[in-house]
Image (cartoon, rainbow over all chains, first blue to last red; front, top):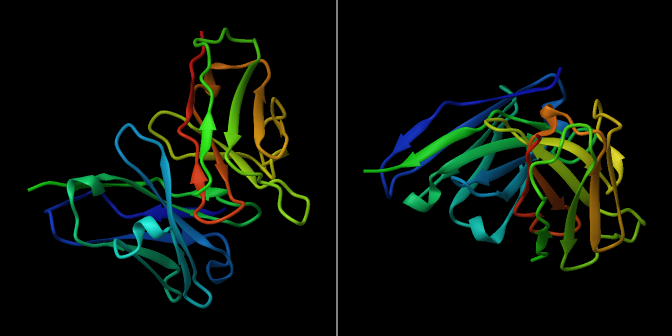
Length: 117
Length: 112
């Protein structure tokens, strides 16, 4: 069965960077778009962008240009998102979600990132 | 960016009744292939969102037929028949017609 296992909770300092992961199993990692989504505390969902692991192509929401960098490691079927120049505004839960039969049909459990000094 | 605006439900909804959640887009979500690129998700408390319907009215795999999506190019409805306790949570619509992909702000459903 399809599973997306995300890395654990992060507590990071302002102005630093963090890299979170999403390990995929149960489908062909290189043939499906992996999306990343942000959910700030008490707020709704924001689409950050996608990566196509087969060729590394990416598409970003302009709002996250320069903030998020998406990469993928085919050998371990793992997608990564690096967030840079962190501020309190970046404190949120970050989800990965894959498009297989339909857009966003499988989601990871989410990673809580807290930015605090 | 396409703005997605969701309605509010008169909560709580009695168990066994029906509930209709509305969503409006600032631009038509109909693509040149004739499909309407609108998704519905349910996020239960403490969980990840779950895809319910896509292409406006196609149920995702394993989703109960109590959930049905309908609408036009810019106005959409998710109807939940015979609501149960497990249907409680926040419902989001999402457009995947053009970039950036955008979500509505969510509609909370409480069950009595």
